[in-house]
Image (cartoon, rainbow, N blue to C red; front, side):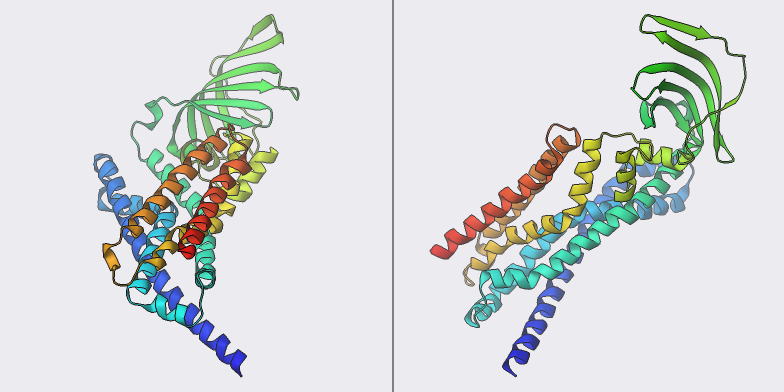
Length: 369
């Protein structure tokens, strides 16, 4: 009977703390996303109006950009929401009551942990399944509605099987390319032929282009210029997966799901990034629940604020600063991992481990006083 009563009390307490935390996290998320959306629209609304897309264009841009902003805002929202929740519980003496009932600081963290992990999983699903689709649709719409997309010089690189593809002009949502150079290589990555195409179009599931110059590499010291009939249209033997939408994803939106990145890393799909980039991004997305747990731990020291001190204590500011430092430090390590300067596992896990150990050290020092 006592065990059932204890279980019921624990369930009620978890539900209460989860409601408080979720309410503050999602309220903070809405505020942060709204601010980021306003800043993005202030930058793009002039261009949208210049394209005569009207209010519907502004709304479409805002809605399609929301998943990316949600993923970017969630770590900070979890930190601020945890701080506000724990600070409210502390100043209202609820933490003191729970301590008097025998609840320790690790026990308090365990009560919040299921909600934090669920938020991490939710954010990971949005980043992995919704954001790539919305960003691809937004990139195609933005390119398709741009009057100068076909005249704006770019320098996109794609690796497809053994070939390297350089694209300078891209419009019509990725269905039309100009000034494309294809470097054909053998299985030993030795250059065999270089084909330059003035125009390329995607028609009925295949790419067709007009070659302007074809160079054949006979040996390291000999390159022959092959005769190309003027205006001849040829069909390229590119894989069926290299669609206009996928090209836009590789060159403009850069947001992909874990399954797509794994296929690119194995060479099944064309890619535009290095293997270290894919591994770092995959590990970062998988470790999101742990990252959110670190945000919770960084907010825990506020439970040691004396209730009478309340909002006059500087401890919440220090906790917030530590959380922002963690975001910056983790972003720096992640950039080094994407570039291949650091091993991907080290780039994702070192920052998390350092801050977890740092928070544990701080909590132990506070407990000793």
